[in-house]
Image (cartoon, rainbow, N blue to C red; front, side, top):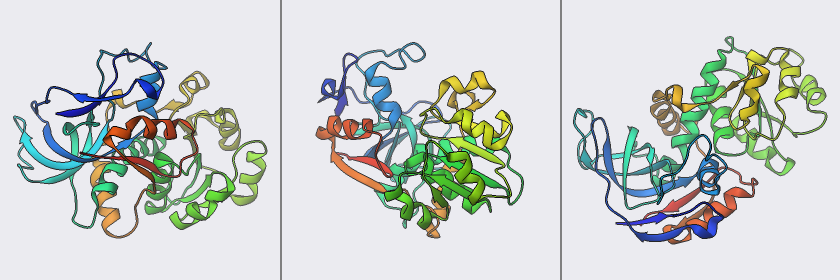
Length: 301
């Protein structure tokens, strides 16, 4: 099969479109003929070697963790889908023609292949860290860095669950956040003062998505580190903040929840750009800029 691989750590230039062995579904897994995959920051962080201490690579590596496609192989113990089902979900090595998924949901007809690929990891990560905070009913949530995939998923899950959501992004993205149901503001210096003006009732929980050093400010805003979560700031744990970690279990239910909301027009992830499989290096390079509204997708084949 054709797949994007890298044989050493480095910049996006180490990515190559090559022939690779086909994977096969193991127990509890399905294999899909992939239609779309999405780019996530973890892909290029792993490729660059930034996470080698915690997640060392076994080369060659096929990047990618979420995709959408058509089931063509079902592993032992899987009864809920069969060959021919259209699904989206999470696995590994998704920048390839054949992809094995560990978690999946049936793709509703109203959900495009693009949206199926875009909402996979974003919705699972968002639901996992949001539910960890256990906000009170009708509480107020602050999402710092809300214009990307996980951030916009957090906003939409929060709104769907009845929370008041304050969300940060650069000013050009404020209209997008309003369209999702959030009250937007800018990030950076003075955030606590701006949030206090927008949410005089206080903030019941805050989540740092961007990982640019706002955690201490979020603790100040909420008054309690246990009311703060972080997606990308791994040093936040030392401050008593919960750091999202899929190794402690995934929020499998989030995929179906996102799909159900999407069919009612209440959940979508903006698509910033779409690339071919051969252009995977350019797709990751764009993700590395950190200025992406929504998700970057890769079309397969």
